[in-house]
Length: 514
Image (cartoon, helix red, strand yellow):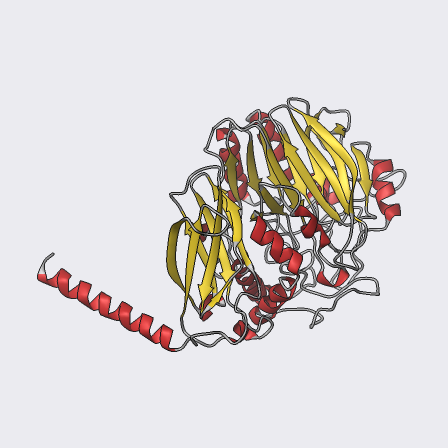
């Protein structure tokens, strides 16, 4: 080391010591209130890594969680046993107000396919101990995989008993396919719980909304028990938005800033990797994950890049299925050109037995017109038929093995096959779709779902009467999906039942009753 390097090194060390001293000097030795009110979480497992998350918020609904310090040191440990007696990794990071005192620790050099336990400490307070798991080695033989799929958890409509039951399912991970929060109040009274505000708009608003939703103990427990993957739908920003287009006709510049606030709060409250850090109103959410030789999970973003919606309702008008002749010549995209190209490259390289496409909205063809003629809910893939055809063409071109779409959005269990030409049921079935009902959000009218089934023989099952989740069990020979329904959502202590079970056999597109 020469003299100039030595001076720089000494200066850097002095700045680091001063920064740490200033941070420590503004943090009380002991928090008066628990700083881990929002819980802990892990996500995005790889064969040698995992993301750990928490956010310090002793007063969770206050701006910045009631904190004012410029830095708060947070210690963390990762061990191979549930009592953390065998610690294999540890460190200190600094939570700052820039990211609402949230932290994302992206660990590498871990062992594949094994459980780990972790804990955070800050200001003399300790978090609960969380459990997580790395993915199996890439390409390694894998006999089984268990997954839960969740969506649509409107806080006012009910408790999150579904997450409590997931704790008994011995899952490998949870996939959330959208509407983690709702930006506005709605629903048929009586509501079980209340939002403090009718609608949220600002960064502080969105942060407070996430804190409110994470006040549910069953949601926090599910985050602490399993690693998660997440993608969004619309209510993380605004109902039925498309890219920078507000369904309410808001000024695009104003809405762009609202979306930036919503995306930032999303990152701050979920165990997302560093690759998803937002810059303004851009957050690169789409990604994929491999699980041995058995499955690849593709997380798709069906909101951020989509083309403007054809035949939207007028601002303030009734939102309903539309007759939309323009769909016949739709040049638009649900995923955007870059994401379509990314997916094409990933599918080309894929070698897994099962290929799971997790995304926000229904992909199956659904004509909502009773009798002759057709009406479509154009916010779903039915409003982007050319984009859907391109995706199906990609699957065919790359001979993608056993494609299965996992969707949410409509608060309804739906099970069906996707045809090579989705609106032509004479063409062969090439993929399967399982649509999960909501964790809590109120469902569609059952009569509307009856119309779905009557007019669309590609759907073999549907009901909107229940809240719950999808539970998937994969083996090399088959994928079995259980529709898990809660008896009620107006109490935390609720029973569950399996409404129906379905099987997709290896090499046989489309679902059948188990």
